[in-house]
Length: 419
Image 1: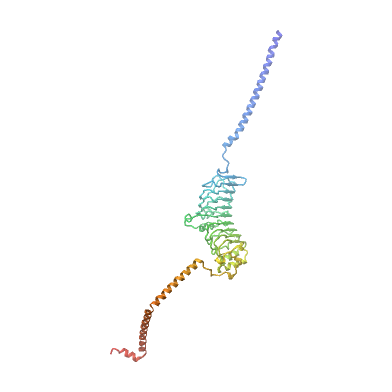
Image 2: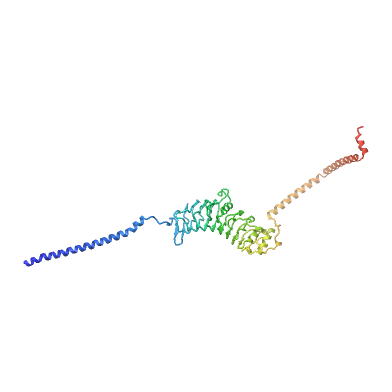
């Protein structure tokens, strides 16, 4: 028994040490797992908190628009925007702002920090623009193409393309300017014709001297101002189709030595005179398009017909046909001879009827006058006899006085007639 009692405490101490060692190991494992889980949790939560604390990245896409950084394109189409978005990304090269409600494009409408240095194509068509102020396209050093079509522009500033301070502004970088279908009422134009408004903007200083394409189609243009093209020496393509131009007599093209295509289809041209024909022929690279004009085939068209037969400038000359007079309608201009062209066109039926009616009325008046003379022939005859006798007595008095003056004796007798 004493031996058993002596072994009991030693065995109990060994078990106690093992239990303590196990608790130590278990506590170390649990503490290390808690530490790792806490560190992983804190590391996972850090990016979200850090991201929320950072400022927004510059150049993010405006909320109503669609952006493609890979294509460098921003589309804000049909969003009813009333002004140009302020947070456009600086990478944009092509910007679509079509189908909005912009109304007015103020000075510096595209001024941004950082600037839109890469924007090269800007489409503002169909955005209800009525006014473009001076310097509206400043701070766009790479702008090459501008489309303002289908806007009711009533006020286009003369310095819209040259900058608010035209005297110190650099020339515009524009290469293509599209102003098709600018539809406004006469009341909206503030007593300014569309022709004069556009001409003032095109010839302001030398702002557009680098322009190569100008489109002015479907604008109801009645004429071209005298020097509207004088400041566009690099122009290559001029589109004036679907207007109401009746003549090019006072327009000079001689300075457009680089002009390659000139579209005049669907206008109201009746003839091109010698001066215009000579200027077009002097341009070395030009191709002219004249289809769908109401050519008047009379003697005034003879020079143009002869020119068409010799020139290669007009691309669609085989399709040019007469519109007036009626007997020449649909005749091909290239098939006409000088004998076909005369200046005695047939009168329209309505005018012929008027002349016939006038002739009948005059004939009726003449017949009535003759009838009155016939019925009063006796009185007229007596009246004529009286006039004849009066004239005879008057002439005899003159004859008697002549004889007295010619004979000195009768003169003395006449002087002493009182004695």
